[in-house]
Length: 389
Image (cartoon, rainbow, N blue to C red; front, side, top):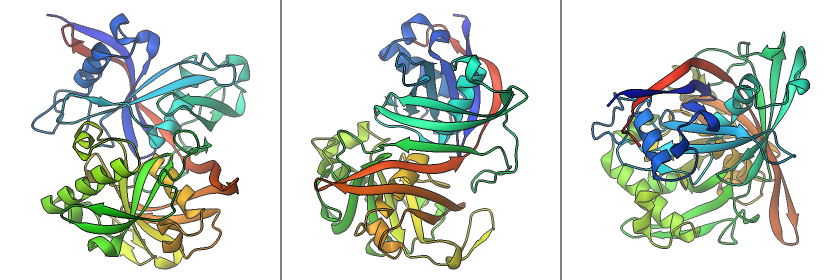
């Protein structure tokens, strides 16, 4: 059986990497949702891999690098491009379509412009283009502002993002009305809940649907300080089991699944994060982070492991929760009205902002904003055996 070539672009967006496709470039069977599409994307990435290395594919064996994106010209007159994100499991045979990737959202606008998905008459010789993106996984609007130099996307620049080695051009990204579902920011109706986790106990938790469903805990309640790096958690099998149990029971309380046993087939959502007041620590790059330069500490897990920096969608959840007085995130940052916070993560710091308001007794987030960067790493064709899907 021969291999078939499929046009693709390998891109970094924020602190993630993924394989980007135009919908119309996919084989016909994979242009619609279903088994053929999932099998194709898994083969591209190199999953499922019992060795958890993804050696025979484009994946990088981490949640940040086992990602795929499918883009098409939007059918909506209010949007330029439709964006579908697939989180590919590393060692299990499935693609999780239940959420968005906030980091790769920053790469969607640049890809769309460079690949003819945005009206060329809107692209200036120099300046920026506002790209309106329909995030098809969660049914939300994302607006990015992409810099243009000499008629093409500008990728290089002096914007530095902790967790990314080299500077690049800044791409501001706004997540409009980021609450999941029909505005149910707090699916339990509470800013803080008592979350019962068998074998672990009862934990205070803020469970929020904004950017991505996230369960926030207090670091001290689970034996952490909030300034941990990856090895402190990812090398501890009991800790990972604890976090997965918390995630599973949090998913049930948030109404995402009916029973905790279903969580194994829904790895991408919800996320689990823990927060603490600001403190000095040494980041994974060796950079010293001072308590004076941050409002709080946050560590988050993705696909069962502590993330090396911060997922973009989780950053939206952090911004949204911080903006609402009384959540665990807000209290860790000092409480009160907070329209923006700078938080410390394993790779450094990140500033995010959100506008929250109470409307008819329900909290509403108008938008959450952060800056990212994006860059094409390679473009051409990926090849997969023709019997892969």
